[in-house]
Image (cartoon, rainbow, N blue to C red):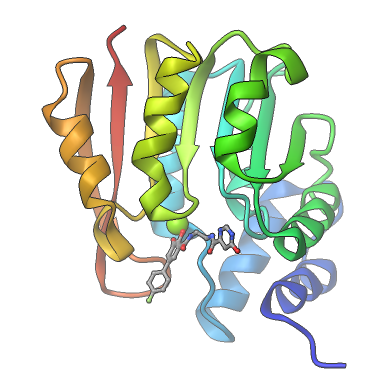
Length: 214
Ligand SMILES: O=C(NCCNC(=O)c1cc(-c2ccc(F)cc2)cc(O)c1O)c1cc(O)ncn1
Ligand SMILES: [Mg+2]
């Protein structure tokens, strides 16, 4: 039977990465996507910016919107302090099934809760379902036209506190123009653009870091 690209990414991890070694999992995916098949992971260049923001925030609670194969999930979770928790939402069940195995190969299942379903359905249930008060860091990497409505929904559900950091991928390519306009013009956010490139390419892209001011 014909394999899917996420399945081929998982194969590359299981063949080339060491169980329990998150950095080797990240390296194996980047090597596969740079040399064999492009895939929509945040990638190594933007991944370094992601790492620096995670290390700076040192979050106890993280929400990731859009898991895909778990590449950024592994990057983030490998940097979290001992009792920190990462909740990652993925709408696509095929992506979720692969991501669970990638996260397990990295040995990070205890830090990560992968939830299958639509962000709009799950965000209002975060507190009651997972006992989350607020998120210290949110990584937005799902459907680009969901960034803005989901950010407004997180505000309405009081999931953001003074100092919560939103980090959004792909604000240039594919782009999230309505989200960018909102966080850059709203008095309730302090925004900063980190110029980079679309994963594994020379095309411009970047991450937007926005601190919620409460
Ligand atoms: O596609 C779903 N999620 C991925 C969101 N991410 C992206 O779309 C994405 C796309 C690109 C990208 C950039 C250039 C290009 F030419 C093609 C794609 C890069 C990225 O870094 C992304 O993050 C999805 C499916 C589904 O059925 N349900 C819920 N979500
Ligand atoms: Mg992305």
